[in-house]
Amino acid sequence: MKEIKERIEHHIEELSKYTATPGNGTTRLSYSEEDLKARTYIKQQMEASGLTVREDGLGNIFGKLGGTMEGAPSVLIGSHFDSVPNGGSYDGPAGVVAALEVAQLFHQNNLKPKYPLEVVALVEEEGARFGGGLMGSRGMTGLLSEEEFKSLTDKDGISTVEAMREIGLDSSLPKRRDPKTMKAFLELHIEQGPILEEKNISIGVVEAIVGLTQYEVTLTGKAGHAGTTPMDRRTDALVAAAKVISQFPELAMEEGNGTVITTGRLNVFPNGANVIPDKVVFTVDIRSGKEARVQNVIRNMQELLESHNQNGIEIVAEQRLYMQPKELNQGIILLLKESSTEMNIPYCSIDSGAGHDAMVFSDVTDVGMLFIPSKAGLSHCPEEWSDSSHIAQAVEIFYETAKKLTEVESA
Image 1 (cartoon, rainbow, N blue to C red):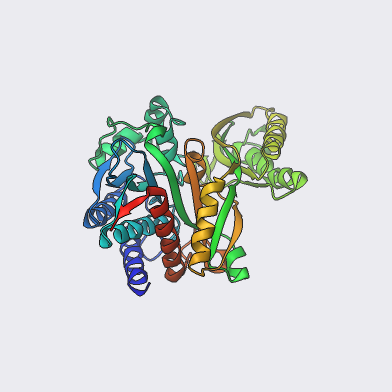
Image 2: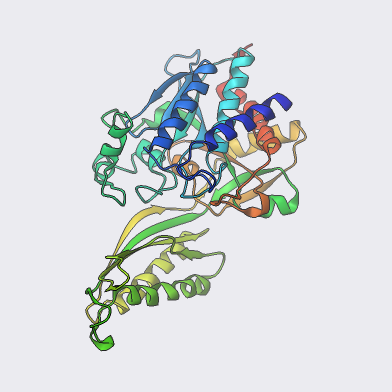
């Protein structure tokens, strides 16, 4: 355990160096220079554990330990390695590091699995550069088409294809993966909430993942001079947007039962101090454990937007992402709990209020997920922190579970 813990701390520390905002959290956007440095490190660690490394047309990284049964589907284990702007060092990388450690244990113990073991490091889970989120897993499972992928651009108008080319990645490689090649997917993630820490429990076995949708809303008005345009002659897109956004919390509170709504990104154009804004683009993120509640809030949001679609203001809302609530595989949940019990590691069942790549894979293969505590429940900020000993415990649980799923033949 001590050796695993030390390696985990080293991996986390190394990956945290690859940030565009040193001293102010982790900012590692997909296909950036920081992405390139992180993926180089990840691939080196995969190779050090005897894995065969490749990348797909999305930039996802795979490290494979072949199985003895020809053509057998793989047990995948991993997470994402991109970040939000000024985020933490654990959201995503903790899961990648845990997967690397499981592979290292297979390598150290000379295990020969019947079914292949694959470590996977996924891109653009956060959607911080190209929007929507979960791009690596959605592309792999066919939820994101080739045409949709190519049409995505960042805030500077740079396309996914252009950005990949910039760091030497080949977007023409296959993206979609045949579900028949995946036996299971395992993911470790920090909780990003306070429950496990408050309960003083080191492992959460995830039973279900919240449903979510994300919209991009564009309000168009008319620009004008800040000093010479009378107040009653203005068509101010930002004022209209502010009125709309201020009413969103009421929609979620009226729905209740843990339903939440967030506007996390807002861009104002032309963004001049002395210019009346003529366009505002903002995001809307809606989440609930029940799909019907998500649908209710969507309808109410659309009615609210329509009520402000007047007096020269035009509003267009585009759905960028929709994921139904997902229940994870009961067979793998049982394996995770059995492994925890066998090693006397305290655990509890928990639901996820955040979306994860695991929810995408649950449509095409058997999925299991573990949470570890987040200090003070903090995430998506520089203060994000999780104890390496908890990651090490998750590694041990996944190691035992992966041995069962890959049907290890000999050592």
